[in-house]
Length: 374
Image (tube, rainbow, N blue to C red; front, side, top):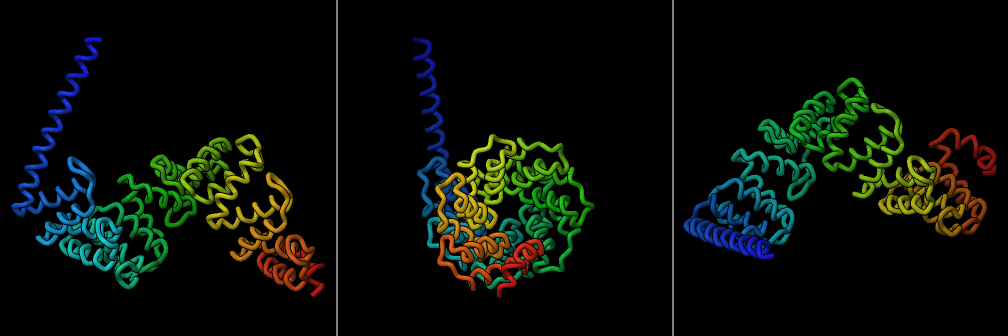
């Protein structure tokens, strides 16, 4: 016991020494900042932002960033832009964010160039302008900024601000992916999966999806689950599919929540559990996932995992139908045709049948006799 007490006493002395050293360090930093040293001002702003050696205080962080920014210190200008963009320690103001990002960007600071590109891409604080977004992304990307390289890849992928060019998208995704940037790793995996800008290669898709998935990128986790489910690029393994669907689902990714619901519904890779299927369908449906809305509607119509309730079935069918989901449109038509959960209404039934038939030849053939009643 005496040894333990001695060790605790020694630890307290060590911690006290560290605290004294930190206090002295902060005092020296404040003295330098008060003398107008821009680097010290920015570092002090960082301390207040993180609560490192001082009480966390966003207003004080802004105060010190501003002092450094007004001296032309680019890191502080960029940080001040971030604080205005997110409303930290100041009222959110995109135009002020743009002002400070531009100050640093024009001095060649890559992070600020990328953030200014974001503002133009999204139309935050400036008129949306994809060409200007590309201009600033390129400046940052050519300095090796991985975020900007990925963003420039997205512009080439979608044809926003530049002519669509999958090979250029792959070029920029790869530059960022090789730096370990998870978003670019996902996008590069998608290019290999679809054969966009590269020869289709499921093994390479899996390689890059896994890189991103292991960093917690939800969409990559979901796509890796799809690869295990289908056996594309890996040995087919439903339990691994469920593992990765769950990783993404627990982060709130709606597509993965729906697929995890299907696995529980059908007993794929897990023990069949309709209650769990309903749980995950609902999670995805509430985010607007049409597949999940349709399946949740089916569960209410059939009383699977929930009390049968046609009005709830109609509610979920309608949400999916209004997104153009053909099967939900057909089911909603049936509800109007038979009067399940709604007042029987043949004209509404035909309205939804026609919507569904226009999208799917098989549905059209199944509805042939009902459509002939027009």
